[in-house]
Length: 165
Image (cartoon, rainbow, N blue to C red; front, side, top):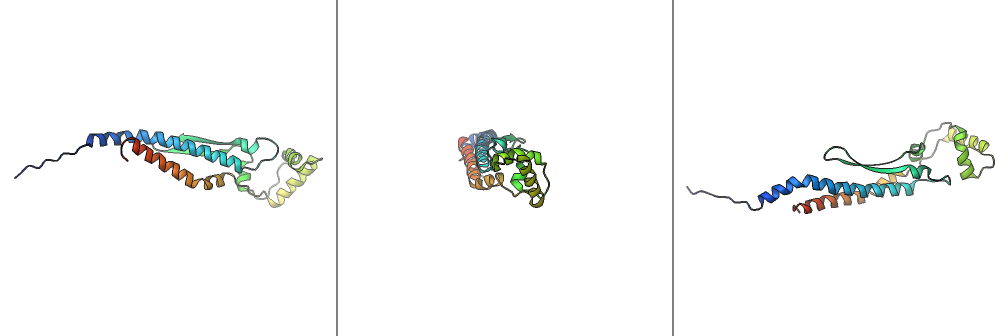
């Protein structure tokens, strides 16, 4: 019986490429996550309602990129202003403290008597709640294609860099 011999060329290089891939892929995905975080934060800020009071809600919107284990990279975008969630989702009727609305009635309504105006606004909120003014969800939804493209490009670049593309 004849002996058969197999020879595989490039096997060592392929094994090395697969060994290198996790680190290279992680680096590319972290960069992609940074691009995504910047886009989401900018769009959420652009979408956020703002009154004449300054930074408020917009100034509290931040995105961070975090590693959650060896293979998971997270982008977290949110707002820290106390009125962030009620603005995004709206509320059921409740009676807010009128004194917390006085500055808003001065800035937005131009109220000469902000204390009385704030009470009237609080009473209206107690009857109807606050309508949602989404800013985070639209930023995410409007950027789905962008996010998928950036992630796909990162994966392709990583495979190319290690010689597997």
